[in-house]
Length: 417
Image (cartoon, rainbow, N blue to C red; front, side, top):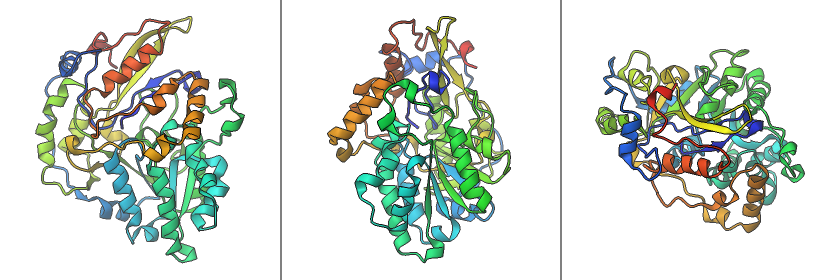
């Protein structure tokens, strides 16, 4: 998950770099992979023990999982083209409509649910109206990804082939926001996106005994308390009332990215060479895979938190490492080796839409973000970018010149909690 989010005071005062699957990347300005080794020099060589995982064909396993679970959740539209393509193939599977009622999405402004319902049902709705659903969310990445511009028309087309009682519904779960009325940060009143997600899931899926494929960044799906955390995930929130109804899937993007552990990635991926692609492991407990993912840095899920002093000034950019990763998810999706996975590029039709790009830049300026970043093009076609973390941290530091910015490897392993 190659994303870097600015969390403003309205978003609990954190910067989060949440990357699942482990990319080997540089961690300090101008330095390459050796910097990663310096940062993680205190990390022992992983020696995971346990039984061998039992991978199954991923599509068949996920469809079968709906016999046991009400909800299956996985990431989407966070830069992993292989994962997005897998999801589109899953929805095209002829068995999908017999297993699933709803597709719940992170990239959908719930303000437009009535428009979305009419479009998905097959009514004549202008594209300019329906694409507001995914272009006008609280998250810029929703509007600059091409995934949802394919997903919504695909579900509509699938519905055209189905009898009325089998037709799918798409649920927009992002909080309602009317960007035409947002003229300053004070007008942006979104506090807990997960609470809105949980509310939609309870009201539209679980209370009605329906089945849903849930497409969200893995952070929203974690079932254990998050380390960065003042807010619980959407799954945590709704499972207080509906316990055990969700299968949470994490997708493999490598082992040990951005740390010294990355040099062992090929060694551990060699253990997966016989696995079918794509494949799913549902029983991780007691396996060497769970043991490896639970070791510091191996799962590659990092948060970078901006620590602030009494006057609100930035004092340090500190990494936080999630603990017990295998207990926070239920299954592991393997789409092939890390170095062969592709990154999703911004479609030209979006980047050349001058009016929409201008609107995104307006929103970025209002939220005190860098408007020029909207059109920054990453020429790397691969999901694994050794320099991604370095560049992201530098961008944070450059945007906070009014306060000291500690960038790795100045932050020692002892500072990592």
